[in-house]
Length: 632
Image 1 (cartoon, rainbow, N blue to C red):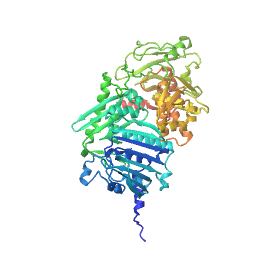
Image 2 (cartoon, rainbow, N blue to C red):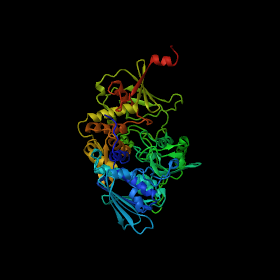
Image 3 (cartoon, helix red, strand yellow):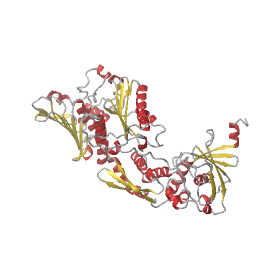
Image 4 (cartoon, one colour):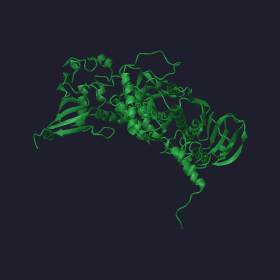
């Protein structure tokens, strides 16, 4: 008996539909692209219950004649491609002739269409790809498509749909990406009868960005443009001071088509090298324009991945355009947000970039230290050479002097001389004590704290060994262990100025789902209007300036499915809290904190950071002698 079967046309259609229609959001994307190709100037999208039960897309495009409507739902039926030569330069959003066939194969479809200039239109209904009714009707010029009961005949696909809220969020994002790519087309989206967004369709990219992504997103954008012969790029990129916790705010378009491109993402982020904090990502809305023959969009059923015939030229164009925009800001150039003129606020002085606190501990302000009798100097580099860093002399467990005489370029090491006091080791500032658990009860070998190199590595001499300690990684582990050991709520601190978070539906759903856990770990969030949340408190170890970034990073981890169980989710959040609360590379760190971090490592309490990286490396006397050819 033959083991090879020829599938029926119906099964073949269902398999093909699975390549195009992954979820209701795919339906919206395909129908909007058809409307754009039909020359529409205005498109209205409506969805209910996450889109699985009802989607309606109406446009004022050229419409279809009755004979065209009758064959439009057949596989490989298209008005956008006539022969193989057309594949060499595709200028339309769609071209495969599979979208309508795929959608109708897994849903119930209702079509109303009227060609421009015709006296009447055509009404059709289809179920599982078969025409049930077709007749003449009166209707406006253009096309209206209603899709109901997506995947009603493919239960295996239906069971993999997420909640209505999650599917609706995906639908909104799909429609937004389409609308953002075509500023000349007005798009209105209604969700369960409520308007989610409306783009004016005036042809101005800045108007579309402002209308679709909001004022908070727009206010920190820099205009970006570049050209190399027949290649051109324009749009907006974010100021380095407005880095985000994930890449969700990066929008790339090629000839009006939304694409995902590792090439463009790398070019963008390379331009920000050495300007963004570690773990922060730029935002952008970039429109790449090039000849249709120079790009291949026929590499993926969803048409979101493309290939460029001249990748290096494209990379260089985007890289230098973004770099020029960032350098323009550094030179004091315009950094105004793309706000429509009628809504633009009065010019304001450019906001000062945040500067890392130079002295002592990130979790305490300089005012807190002065109130306790400490002497705190000004910004890094303003102290006089050999100025004493200040514990009060009568309450000082270590007599600590910091030599800030500029070191030679070849040896950027701060020398610290320390002498143990006769006082008991119990008068450290609380912020240091809180980072350590019972270090005093562990065996610590004799050591000499040499100092700190590159504002990152603590140098410690232990016998005949030189130990290098990553201060951020080690301190992060100390905080993580302390937080994880707490079987009660983490102490929270109320923010003097609450932080407003503008969130997507998916992010709001994550906050609601993990609300109890977030509160337990010190985050106090409450709804503020329909789309925003107010962050009123954060864990006590965390600086207020890190609050927004921490929440963004936590939501990204939860959204990515990295924490399938509550315990795992708790650990993921604690990783972020510990990372944000720990001392950072590049900060001037107080010698007392360097010593306590070193002792935590020397005692064996800290070996790896929460992510599994080692926190220290050792060089023996023999290793150093070999390095300098003293021995062979």
